[in-house]
Length: 478
Image (cartoon, rainbow, N blue to C red; front, side, top):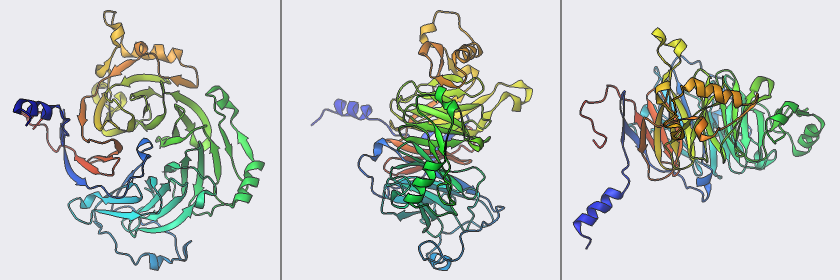
């Protein structure tokens, strides 16, 4: 038998999974956990998947879902015959939707303590991403886009668990994997689909798909290119608008490799995270490529905009979260806390404030979070006090952050920026770095009530925000 001392030493060496996260404002605790569902497809751990969240308020007006005969010969009446999930009328309801292998998991966070809180819909293909339409969804109708590894896109009613429509059926328009889906902000019917072959297709949910023959003829006759992209990177960005009244309404050639992630700012600026290491920024209404950010090495897998649109954070295969200033067009900080690929980054609006919105001229602060394949959840506070000058500058006169930003901005060309050398950019350490899973983490979302994390196997955890400040005698292992 192993001696007790060695047994204790072995037990101490095992990583301890945390179910609480102490922070200055209090302690975040795991209040709900949902088990693994579906079947993971071998190899998908390297690709990840995307989830979606919405909060439906009682004041939201009912939308007009598709009426009459549906695309598959099912009437609205017959589709409504399945049992409905209980909703909380007269208040607000929060839904979180995420894929787990071949299952679409729909969680009603308002019913977290009920056995009806989570439901699943099994589909024939592996699900890669999903996105809720925040404009049309109501208590009675939850409109969800679902992307598959075959290239097919489904429109699903999350309340009745019924398929309303299909797009890119059989991969007719694009037979590569769907990497991400996003509804255009404030739109009831227009959505974007990013594919693994570097193409972005724009769809109208109310239109049918064009045939392969008509699509090829229409696309070939109306190519339009953006010549201004030639000085951004080596890829040739172009947009084609087929002369048909069917989907897709436009086709974007973005990169030579996968487009991993789509993110919109509040000002209709769109960032596309690409596998070639570029985060390409577009003015979506004019379809113009305006700026490009490049990682130090490896693919960029995720990004997030600050609430005021001044900063963009990116994460990818270099294990580093990078903060970019969109005003100065340069990197502001390299955030070091993970030792594996970054899966998701999110700002926390409740802890974000710019100097112009603070009384008395108090310095600004931006709180953001990151998860990675190392199973860790990191919290970061971006402010002047938390930026650290590179160790290579120790012993030299300390330069202010503003001086470093000015230096990097001067080096940046007008429309492209790269992660600078270590000695030329400030670094940041997380205010909290916790191991919360023994397996890679895939998805995260920050809600008004807390934080949602999902592992690659499909296990969901909800971390409740602290209602009060931290106890004075709270230790990390309590």
